[in-house]
Image (cartoon, rainbow, N blue to C red; front, side, top):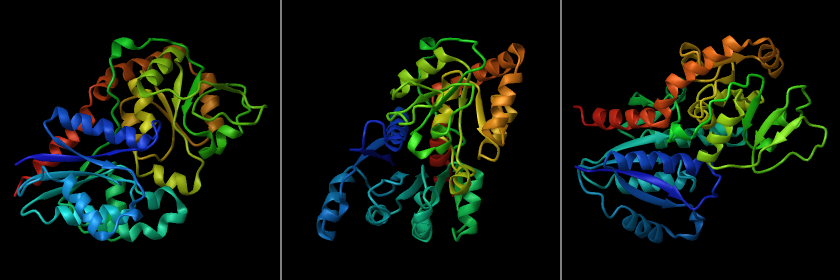
Length: 335
């Protein structure tokens, strides 16, 4: 019996989807898993026969009785995902684990009509790795049959902690994200500047932003640790807020791995984990966040900072991902 894991390629270098899958696959390799590479391409160029031949080549190392962990989505359309999994199901006694990274019908309101198609895809799994308990229960409420599942909880960020700074600056806010997707960034006229890490800079000239540009994961963590202060996780409400109550923010793990406490919106899926471990605080608005930041004492900040320092090795050494993967394999092998 062998364990295989899919991994996507061909997307842009700053694609969080690809970065997350590549990182997860790397942890899988450390556990002895084989990789099944999936290239991002226009699937419509393949006829059904050509697609089947493509699948044959991709799964050449898979045998009967093996386990395949499918990182979903592949971003090659949900029809591709269905077809690939159906191809895998031809192997006798193959166990399928679907690792849910993103659910596009929850990410974009215009894709909501696709939710039944995605749930039908998840039905094919022997076990699901879900980002949160909330996600599993949402899928169940929308038609998913009862299944074995493992909760991921947090995105890891492999990192050498010795590269990080230990800055104790308090009143500094850092945000990593595309400003075109977050309107609050485009309206940032608060007295406290926002350090923005993104490939695009807002065009408005009256914003109190310090533009830091786009950095890869390791460089970003180093710069964040040097800046100090807090990492900001936020949403603009509405449909995005519904999704953040179920998925887990990749950048949340980035801030914590870099040694920064975080400010998060109330209601995100891992709010309890943040609160329980004193890794930062949750607020209902940016205004509330800035007011609380203004009142924060050096002693209070150091309490957050020290708690993060104790927690960060879990993320820096990949324990959340490894635990989810090992537990998932263990569970599907149980009678």
